[in-house]
Image (cartoon, rainbow, N blue to C red):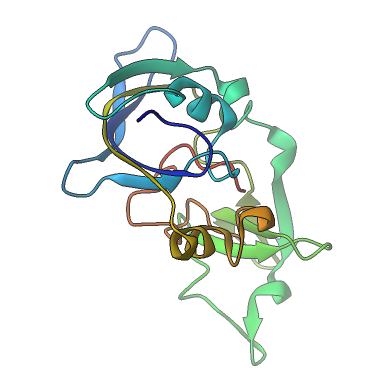
Length: 194
């Protein structure tokens, strides 16, 4: 059996990033004890990540690099924005427990799409946040092994897609909603739903 559409895939991996002229840095690991488990071909993972795993079998090793444009894109300075401090008030009081420098906070855009943002700075009237993915601008190097592959049951498909094969990701992403291994260092580093 090899990895194809709508199969449940279990992999272990180490994810490295490497800035120019620097030593590779280990960003996250999915171990055999806490592997990445996902449904292949339904839009949960980055397309190039899946392309690299397609047709692999249980026991196959993998070692590949995704260029940043095939991962989370280039870092965009325009995705660093200032928001009025009032946006973060709860019952008229600024939420300084949740909104602290370095925290990742959930936001929603005008269309109702959920976004994660890192708090960069807080001043008298505004909060500066970074909407770039934490791995934007990085090339991602995955080294790992396929642990298990099986055809997804109806229950598994419903769990991964929020009710059926055609409904897509269902909002699951690298913020820990899929499983404990996805980012969020990076979200398994490869989740395509952002």
